[in-house]
Amino acid sequence: EIDNSNLQADNFDDFLAKLKAEAESNGEQLDLSEAEAQELFSLLQDDIKNTSDIESEIGEDDVEGTNLEIQQENSTAFEDQDHAAISDLVEAKDHVPTSKKVGYENEDPNRLMKIRELQEALLGMPLKRVKKVLRAFESTLGYPSMLTLVPLLRETMPDRVSHGWLKRMNNKNAEFALSKAAEDGIVDAALLNSMLEVKANSGSINGTLELHSEQFAKHNLTPRAYSDRLVLQMLVANNRLPRALKFKQSVEEQGRNIDIASYGSLIQYYSRHNQLGSAVLLLKECIQTHGAPPSEAFLSQLRTLCKQNNVDNVIGLQGMIGKDPVDWLKHGERYLKRESSKKGRRHVQFAQNRILA
Picture (cartoon, rainbow, N blue to C red):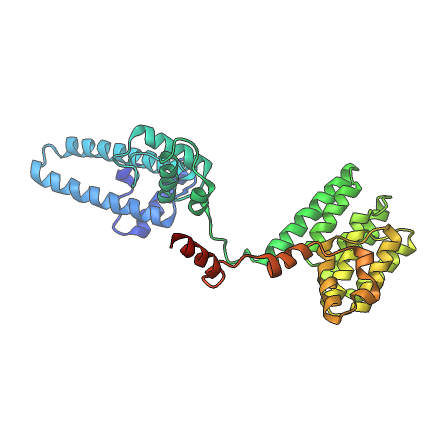
């Protein structure tokens, strides 16, 4: 409670000094900001002015009684104002709407309850957007589609959240998960493969190679074919072909072979760079090692390159990887496709006219 009679002052500095002194005498600490203290000083000055006006109207006989009543009213008003300010702060923090706030006037109680539930689920979302989400739910008997909700709920990423920032945060989270798993002794090959995938997708070449060479040995685990593929495909995707071939050699020295998909990535890289001889040599090595060629997704560029150089029959490509699975489509589009233009239908129309004639 604030005793207004002790806080009367001509300027704000004297008022603030008296306010601090009164708080210290009560064993409390003044927690008002300068702006709040300035507002309280203005209210007090207005009350003093109103009191002087009333005193001049009612005369000197009733001054004491009137002052007492005014002080009680001011004290009650200050208490109500403090409680209202605290309530507003709590409501703003918890995002709970009340009918006294701007935007909630004339709202139906049932609809106000729905708004409250949405604000509890979507913390910090402006009231205008919350009402749009509510209208989306009210416009259908079931749930609104994602095409309707996504534009309403989409947030604009801040400037500091860049592609590099997301990569760094992803790496930090993955490293934290790996460290916690190491403390609990639950590190396995699947977890290390997930860590390898995070490193490889972030483009950290040295970090991925270091993780592959050290972490598996540290936890007494043997890298799987998928582990080797993640590293090799990352090197190929980043145009580090010499390092990819060196990594392939190191894997073979450890008594393992890269899988068919890894061979396919190397063949596809050579085919896209018009290195036909290297692509064919790796294809033959893959068939000799695994007994089967890579999938057509890796070989389509090689087929095109062989056709462009007219060496299909020379190297026996069809005997190694089989016929082109889309040959039937190319033949049909070229020779069997019906022409729907006026020129293509001219003879059909001529026969119809002869019959009608």
